[in-house]
Image (tube, rainbow, N blue to C red; front, side):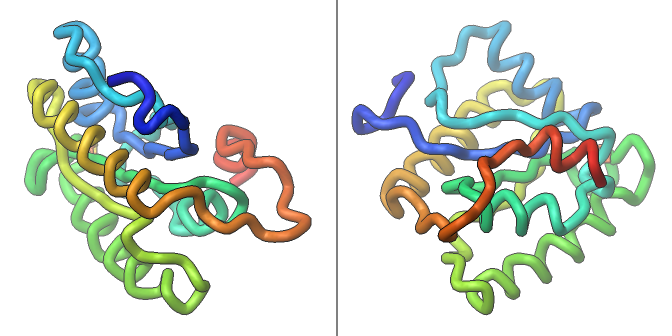
Length: 153
Ligand code: FES
């Protein structure tokens, strides 16, 4: 399953370096087949994710955004994912006010050893985004360049 429904959508994944990026790597090493819609941005910790990363990605052309960090109490920086979880819940609640379907944003926790879990997370979120279809584009929205956006922050 490389491309779902014959069309690739734009899904941005913000993954913490210490757990979820490792989980994605484990899935790759295990050759677990996944959809190819996800574009990964590696961040040091889920607590490093500025809510604007998610808002801007969704406003400027991403069809979905997935955040994944270490399981609670496993954060490399002790509490980063607890801070992240509070912010991410607020973002989810605010999205409808911006005219964005909250199902276009999810967050989860995946450890470096959970390659199978990572595969399942990517598959189910990608299917969810495909069921929603491409997101509405803002008129005059600049081309989405998440790496530049993160670097400028
Ligand atoms: Fe992974 Fe903090 S280091 S969530």
